[in-house]
Length: 343
Image (cartoon, rainbow, N blue to C red; front, side):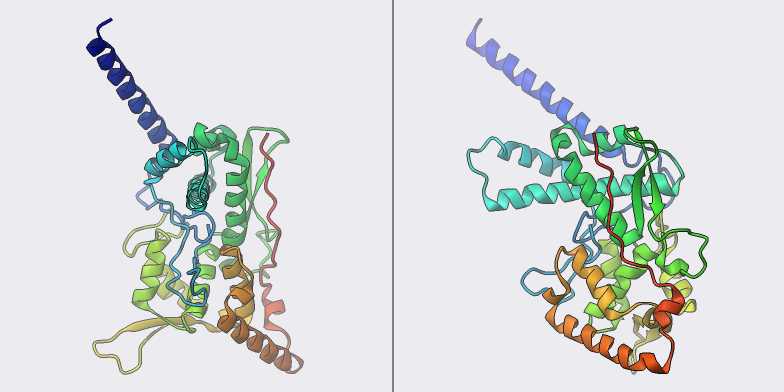
């Protein structure tokens, strides 16, 4: 066969393979949104863990200065993961994997976990079945061997941020469900603020405000929420209309304070913790939440850790004079994340 003809055949086969891979990636990523054609935005909420509003923990801190709050929400799943996947796939053929390559591969797994969280929350919110086969499609065949680790990351994020636990409907079955890990949802001793879905936005906001010096400007709050996939004027598929939620609902319920900055002209606005946030949780609990999201201990934030410990001491001294507000309010208890082991 003439050499030129062979070259044309090889080029044609390569184009065909590229088209097949592209279509496969598109179909896998589309699986998260195939049932969610609602007017609301389906962005995620994940931060230091998977990235969504929803994908790994909503508060991601700088490794060089963990005490700062340029900590935007690190769980937003970038939809460009398909291209990144291709680069990771190619790197596997190299003889030695550099630390940067390994870190990049972990980032991809985190993104995949963010896609899973999006899918799980969407199905849960729409009361539709959660199928293992769908989850495997989202992960894609290239990463199927990493599915247990990806699913574990997603479970940890669901537990920490949303207070939800993934459980099998039947042992060794193909169907799963999300349940509230705080127990009976009819228990009125636990405020709705600490349950799904409000918990998923309130906990990150309280963490962001605390890390920002106990107050955050309106602009900083929206920059943070945007990194979580929550946008002003866009209905979110979990939280609804976000401006109303954070400037009216949570303010009226006294979890947030929304006020004009003193002497600002033109007027500027800021957010602080509300009275019920101070009563029903504490700085140390919120700092522990932020630390877990970033896979660290609270002492990784030395200045804030010291402030949180002083806050605990003050609470302890005040305890004999009044009953503990946290106990009276039924603050959510910390839980260990249990994740079904995929077959």
